[in-house]
Length: 52
Image 1: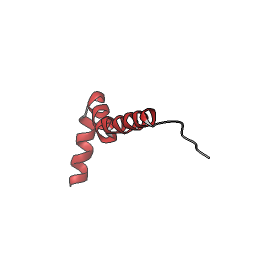
Image 2 (image 1 turned 45 degrees about the vertical axis):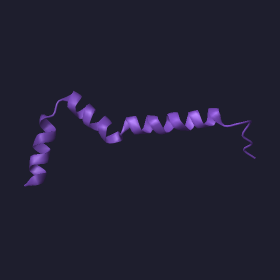
Image 3 (image 1 turned 180 degrees about the vertical axis):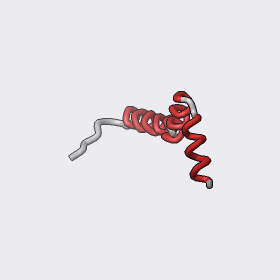
Image 4 (image 1 turned 90 degrees about the vertical axis):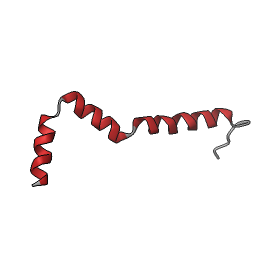
C-alpha cells in the first residue's frame, strides 16, 4: 500500500522538485563546508607540507 502511494507521489513531482529533493539528499552545503575548511586549513598550515 505504501509503495503504491510513493510511486504515485514520485510521478506527480515536477522536475524542479525532484532536483531540489536530490540536492537536499546530497547535502551539498555540508560537502562544500568540508572542502572549504580543508582548503583553508591547508593554506593556514605553517611551512611546507612534506608528503614523503
